[in-house]
Image (tube, rainbow, N blue to C red; front, top):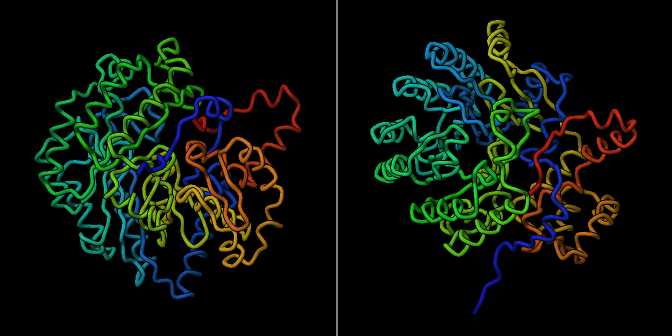
Length: 478
């Protein structure tokens, strides 16, 4: 018996529909946050949680912005420095912020998910990380190792096997490795020299240390990449056999990210070549047994992400796909974004502003958003589509007390074009994204994005000259 592939690549459809659009790690998206929302609003949201006797577990995110080397493709919030004293200063403030959050969540501070992102979290020394983890345990109640998901992003160039074992002893049980590409010319073009043997040594150490999951990041569309180099990198990755693979499309946006200005546009593969690389990656990874989770993520069938998707428990947040849905997200560090009791709040984006708020005894919140009922409804719809590729219209009508087909009549009409292209099916009670439509899930979700529609209407009303000067906010959907 043959089984239907979880995702199908159609070059004509992808070329036709690829456009700029959000990644929906939140809804509304972060570009809708305003400075009207501040520290007081966050405390009010937290008070509402306390009043209702909130006992949901927490997801804790810590942002470490430092790197000692610049990767030209990078679009993260990071600080390139070899001055380790800056990390020591930052660590002190990070401990102050996490202690404040721990006190605010007293009595409801059970953590079931922890993620360190960056930057390079292992920029902190082994001793600094041990001290930080001990500090977190004093202020939060961590679930046991076999229940909690505690992950850290690692640049394999910054650690050795001994450090990997130390991280496991400190409580981390999942690790994510930046790889991007194994070809020497590509690595040179993006200023990230990382030999295959170095990466494999870290992966083998993680297995020896009994990490529950190993994830790797790859990027297609980088300078000097070809179908052949992509094929060779994929072959090595498949042999390495990580549990999860994140396959990102390189978005060349030098007007937003200064490091990308060091990349010669003449070295970038043509759009048709990028599509060929994407098709190759999907083919090779699915044939190798990986399940397409969504967006840019693949996982082994036995991995928790794949299991959660099969069981309808998959969730999406600022760190991507997650198995822990019923949590409030508390994010600490410069630029970090929290999601607590129907609100989003983002920290200051510069160190000076971040430090100044904490020196004043306040959480370093600079902007945010309080979700109204329409936001909550649309967030639910977008989450279900992003995670499950299907949506029960009756469940929305019952759970959110709205007649779906009336409330979303304009959206359902707009989806008619996707139905005609074979990307979506609409039945009496179900909206389903077909395997051919799954690569374009962002496009489907954009139909339900009221804020995006309003922004486009405003842009359309602008004079042509003014509209032409508006910066592109998003990467392309494919």
